[in-house]
Structures are given as structure tokens and as C-alpha cells.
Image (cartoon, rainbow, N blue to C red; front, side):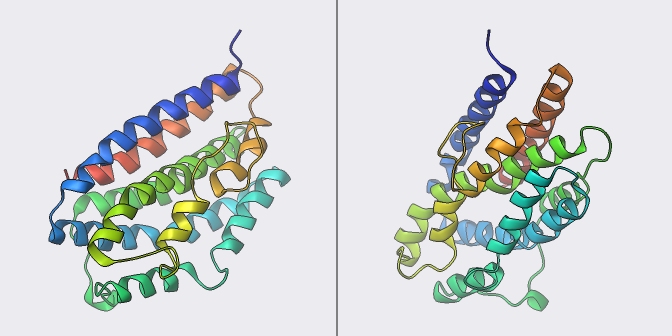
Length: 226
């Protein structure tokens, strides 16, 4: 009999594959459109730490809270990752100060609002919030950076040595092991803590719903560009 964790891992892997297929269009975007993608993603990235801090302040499971807090701490190693992102954009000639940049899409605003408002309360809140963060904040962004990277190299000449943000996130966000197995990337650090919260079909469905919500929000962000 397939376990709940195996079923969730399969579902997560299926959605990750669909998401990667969706992003194939990145290679066909013109330079201006690709620049818009990067600047819109910069706005999306700014909501990362506030989202994680909201969960960290309320989560009850110590193992999960430790994971979330560790990832928040990583966002300031070796420096604030938002500063490192801006350094990459400066090097690429794309940096725009916050005061001079206005998000170009209603979709971005909708996704930002929905992600920040996702936070759940109740008996299964740790499980739901944890799975949402794992997929929305780590697994799918890892795929994004993996697909973006060839364009960043081709269009802007970034390398693993010169990139302070994009290469680092391509490496440390990706999923390398199956759900329930411990790992070192941000996606995989959630793995065992979340597996330990799934005990029955109610937990399974709550986790699956959180995964689906995370996928739909990220997917909707990208639909506007293709």
C-alpha cells in the first residue's frame, strides 16, 4: 500500500514537472520581456522573509519552527539576500530603486496578497503552513532559478563566481531528495519535519491542499508572461 508520504511526494513531483514545462517559455522571451520577469520577481522576493516570519512566530512544532528560523537566518548570510539580488541586477544593468519601480501587473499584486494571507490557524496549521512554505518558497523557486540561469548567463554574462544571488538560490533551493528524507537544501530541510506531521487521511488532504495552493499561486504569476 502506498503511504501518505509517498503519495504526497508523487503529487509534489508531478506538479514540479508541470511547473518546469510551463517555464519553457522563458527561453523564447525577448530581452525586454525577460527584464520585466526579473524585476517582477524581485518584488515577489521581497515578501519572502515577512511570510516566513509570520509562520515562525506562530508555529507550534519545534522541529518545523527550527527549520523556518534557520532558513530566515540563511537569508542574511553572508549578507541580506535582497541586497545581493540588487547587486546582481546592478551588474546586469537592470537595478531600479524601489521608489522608482512600480509593479507592472495586477497578477503580481494578487499573488503577493494571497501568499501573505495564506497563513492558517487551527489543528493542522503547522502542517499546512509548512507544506505551503516548502513548495511556494523553496521547491518552485528552485525550479525558477534553474530555468532562468541559462538566460542570465547568455544575456548578461553571469557566472557562478560573479553572481551573488541567482546562482546561490539555484543551488540551495532545489529539491534533491524525496519527501521524508533529510537533506541540506532549503526544500529538503523541510522534508523530515513535515513528514512527521502527516498521520492520517485528514493530514494528507490538508497537506495536498497546501501544495496545490502554492503551485497555483506560482503558476499564476508565470502565466502572465507566456
